[in-house]
Image (cartoon, rainbow, N blue to C red; front, side, top):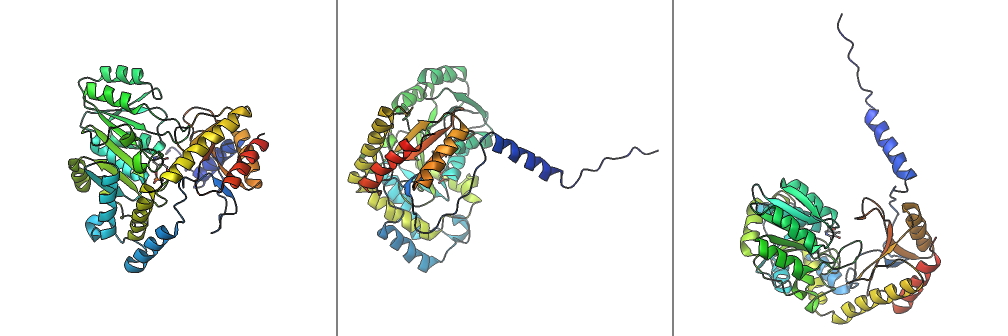
Amino acid sequence: MAASVSVMDPQDWLIRLERRAQLRATAGLARELRPRGPRDDVIDLAGNDYLGLARHPDVVAAAAAALREYGLGATGSRLVRGATDAHAALEAALADLLHQPAALVHSSGYLANLGAIGALVAPRGVVLIDAHAHASLHDGCRLSGARVERFAHSDVAALRAELARHVSSPVVVVTESVFSVDGDLAPLCELHAACRDAGAVLLVDDAHALGVLGPGGAGAVVDAGLAGEPDVVVTATLSKAVGAAGGVVAGPAALRRHLVDTGRTFVYDTALPPSVAAGALAGLGLLRDADDKRALARARARQAFGVLRDAGFDAREPAAGVLSIAAASAQAAVAWATACREKGVAVGCFRPPSTPDATSRLRLTINAGVTSSDFGHALDVVIAAAP
Ligand SMILES: Cc1ncc(COP(=O)(O)O)c(C=O)c1O
């Protein structure tokens, strides 16, 4: 007699997903998509619009003009459909600002990171990544197919020890500059010295420093005097201080050439819409002249740190515009962020796996476009709403 074959219920996978959703809910790790109207009725300390440029009339006008000329979608990759003047001008402006020989725009910062790491990794290569680096950097390492090792957060001695273990392999070292969840700054010069001694390449994701740190908002790599070094590559998103969307890989011209020929997240991805490229270019122009807003954002981050620390909270000293405050648990973080929102203040709520350690936290991202009185009020709300 033939053995009976057990046929899976076609709904099994849905039942599994439902169980996992319940487990996440029990652990306080469910996420919620809240509706958002065109006019925010909250004080925004959750978004990444550090300089308040996303709604700047010049940015909106530049994007609207390109939208009328080119239509909405890019309709294909730039290799297939051509590179518009807006893309070319944006790349020239980015290379100039970042003091790098060349820049290649991708349709997001996430994809720029995947592309950059894939390009830098050599056959039989090794990637060493800071344990607190952004998910897109970790994903880029995984996808690169290289051997990947994490080193302890911002620990130069730990990095040197890892480099010593891999002397016979080509190595890429990956870090953020300003860390997106905790807001601290990587020791870029020391990391670069370790890379230089070992013949490794350093990739820095400057997402949270572009526009906020450095001369003319050129970011932390320029600020550290490392821009243009042949063993340093920079990535960044245009979705934060630039107020737009898209991502960039900046470095030697040979890297750009390599990405245009082989970068999967460039070649096989529809281009950034020309309207967004034009808006980003306008944002970049404003960003360079926004020393007052940069100074304000950084002063507010320090102000918030002082106020919250004096009120007894476990806040981390911010290097730029990201202020992180530890919460007792994932549930406490959700309750805290929800209470803030109910009082009209939007703050970031970070829980595992979005936090680099197991600690849940509130994240305040400073927006120089918020009025001083709203900002002071928002800090009062954050303190009063603590569970
Ligand atoms: C450090 C860092 N890198 C990369 C990204 C991804 O950029 P994008 O949103 O443009 O994909 C983010 C978040 O958005 C980030 O915080």
